[in-house]
Length: 372
Image 1 (cartoon, helix red, strand yellow):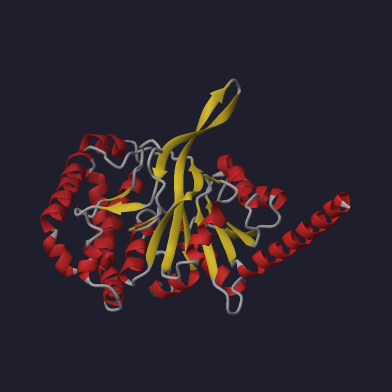
Image 2 (cartoon, one colour):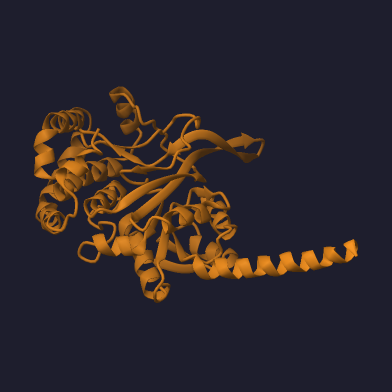
């Protein structure tokens, strides 16, 4: 009699698990995973495989080949045929390419009455299998959360004879974005060991390397039909979007149980001295320096409350003065090639400011709490 119960229990649990799996698939939302690649074949296989292996399976993978010359499109077609492949004939930059993926997801993946999420992911990221499921679990319980991200750790390539091995470290790459009174934006806890960063918390924003967005939040803060500001091309566009989400009252959440790894090529720390900053800048291309400086100014013009500007003016002025002196002394060509582009685009930035500041839902005091 006792033995006959075993197959019955087995059948019960099998049926129950099947029903639970069906219920999960119908209650959890659709996620579009968006990856933009520009000559990133070195990392792409690991990134796409980590998406394929996610426990949350209601996914659509969208890959933009941003005019790569390394065979990216052929590789994706051959090895990841489930991916939607968008191929640009020229490099349109980070902002425009990711906007393409979001526009595609809105037009083709949105289901009536259901929320849609987009995971914006760099091609040099490796997700743990439950990364997306853990973010979704938090975001589904917080409808005020417009963006979320997990604990991003660093992975290094370690030479091993003729090959290389991946070293999945316990060094933090990012636990979200922090912005100081000077308006310098950094990755929280970058460069620190992962010892005490296991508390879920609201943050100013999430690093552009890996962000989950709620589509309704992106729709709410879109400017001139753009989610990421395409005038930025690349660099600081994630901070700009985080700021706009905050101004409209959308929360950003750090979810430590969601873990991923990042091949950070330019390794910095949150608490970086000015000497270390200078050393880092000397290793950057002039294009990166130009875009970073220009886009920081655009970001302030678009999003800064005048009240907060006056309150924090000493910190902002000193930070900007240091950057200006550095460029004039050590990178004069960067400054003088950036200046005309900056001046030419100021009217457009001010036009966007009119729309952004004119539609805010939070006060200058509420925003000021993030500037520490």
